[in-house]
Each structure stands twice: as structure tokens, then as C-alpha cells.
Image 1 (cartoon, one colour):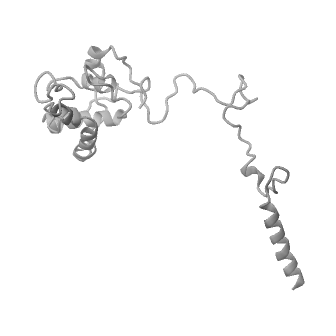
Image 2 (tube, one colour; image 1 turned 60 degrees about the horizontal axis):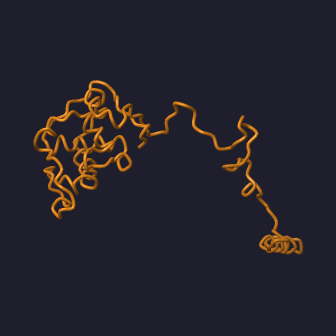
Amino acid sequence: MLKKYHFILLILVLGFTACIRNDKKPGREYMPDMSAHIAYEAGSDNPFFKDGKTNQLAPDGSMARGKYIYPLSDTDYEKSASLITNPFQFTSDEINNEGKHLYKVNCAICHGDKGDGQGHLVQINKFPPPPSYLTEPLLSLPDGKRYHTVMYGKGLMGSYASQLNHKERWLVLSYVKKNLQGISTPAPATTATATDSTKTN
């Protein structure tokens, strides 16, 4: 019985002394690996790399997960018509739900819920009306030029590359074509040419 009380007392003493922390008595570390781990801190010297740095750049040609390489620059609008195609085959549910939501959040304020260029900012005279999706030349605009416009912007419209990722851009464009313009999109014959990592997601 006495041994049992000694053991409990020892545990209490160790527990309380471990809580005493000051400059001269930092306390006891029962699991030092929690604070003194073996991994190198970011920005610290590292003998395992030739340049002696822990922070390393990604190898040339590497691509972050979920990112895509967009092969054209902002001046290649005309080239995009033939080089960029929609790599996705979205379901009606994806277009009617996520595509519609993304359009309303990012586009409708200028282009309008119907795509007629009569969005809220136009109605309060903040911007002149953008071209209507319901008339030419936007009705027959190639997919590549549509995507390039979302990537880099055109006219008064700025780039939406930072607001929408690769898949979301195509979802919005698919919603515009199918639901606002009434254009049915055939299944893509090949995989994407358009990927984007020069302009990342």
C-alpha cells in the first residue's frame, strides 16, 4: 500500500515540476522530438543539397498537382481559335449547377443573367454593356478564343485566371454555350491541348 502512495506522489511531483517554466528552468521534456524534430527548418542551411539551402526550387518542367500548362501567351488570341479545345465532357448536372453558379458569381454582374450584356454594373452605369452572347460574333466564337479571353481578358474585361481554375473556366464557358446560347457541344475527340501552368490555376 505504501509503495502505491509513493508511486502516486512521484507522478505528481514529476507532473508539477514539468510545468515550471522560466529562462533558467525550462522544465523537463518527456517527448523532445515534438519540439526538436529532425526535419530542417525552411530557410535553414542544409548539407544535403549542393547549394546548402533547405528551400529548393521545383525541377524544370515540373507541374503542381491540379495545375495545367496553357501553351499560349496573352498576344496569341488568334492562334487560340485552332489550338485550344475543351478537354472536358461535362454532364448536364455539372453545367446546370456548378457551371451556372460560377457564371452568376463571376460573370453575370456585367454580362447579365441572360447573357445579353445587361448586368447590374451596366444597369447602374458603372460600365458600358459588354457584347451580348446572344448575337454575333460571340454566338459563333471558337472555344479557344472564349478560353483565351477568360485567361487573359479582352477589352474592358480583365483576366479571370486567378478567380477560376482550368476546369471551372470550361464549366462557365459550357454553361454559356449550352444554357444561354443554346449551342449543343459534341463530345471532344481528343484530350486537352489547353492546360495552364504558365498561368497557374
